[in-house]
Length: 423
Image 1 (spheres, rainbow, N blue to C red):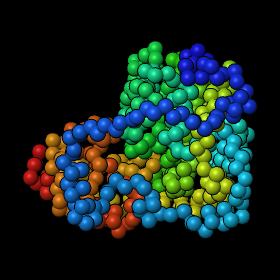
Image 2: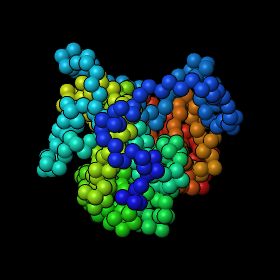
Image 3: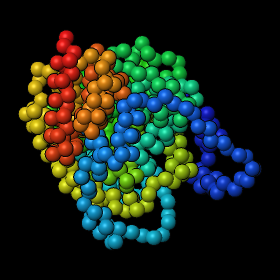
Image 4: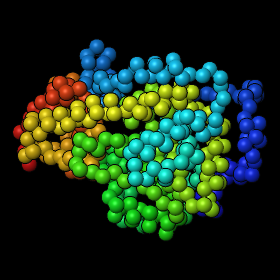
């Protein structure tokens, strides 16, 4: 365990659960220390400024990268939630550090349904319930790193990952392929982060890549973090086979939750699945229990409805998957591949569009989209996508009529820019 030693736990490793619970008490400090909020001045992006000005004028701006399902008219059936609470809710507060038994058993069933040939692999004692995947990252980084350690994060990738590491005083090292990882690892590197399907590229690891990942982690003494929040959404894409990454030789933390599985971001319930060699598994479980017992952040209402909500997930998932299929059909119908290129992802909610417009005109393009069409879109630069041309990240979960309007606006503007700036 020496490589994954965390100074935060040095005086806690040997304490019993009873001692941990006793240690959790209300903070009664009244030392009079004043905290002063200092507002830093930032140079604001002109695209953001125009968007804010339009909104202040009461002009509706359509976000073509919208990924909040509740803003796209997708809602989990509230009757299932209401019925579950009415029949199952117990008002007695008996918190459990890793999550309630009934909730963890529901998560185990979810994985057994997904991977019926591996039913025996999933054990309730290997799951830790948390409020969000962001909190899951916080727990994991606290468990296996010290300040100024580093982790490897995918590029392209979601910018939030850097911020989550920053708050744990952990540095991030971007990597573009598994093959380059050995050259990037330092003495303080503790983990490789994989997001699959990737956000926003939608890439899923092949079996060969999984073998390479585990080999690298084993040789370099690294933990593996797998963020699989989009894993249920491959049915609208290529014929992709999603593989749960398993190993008894290296620590693997797998993250998922209700935000994407059931389109319930407000439920605030996610989880960590832990795998590790026998020599370190109990220590890592102990650390996660310490953290979970310290914060007790899991919502009891969400735990109560979890079994029925997970059982009914296909009701909302099928709506979303069918919508993405129809939207992809519109993409094929409206957009001419001669002036805009894309590839069908392995999974996820996005398609990456590459224009033939130089990225020197990125701000001009986005400002024109706002001014003329009252629509906004995120550039691939935000996610670390490298290209000499403007690359756009398009959400496939938007309402079909709005998605179609967005495509027509993009087509008109791209043709205009191509005519103004021919190559």
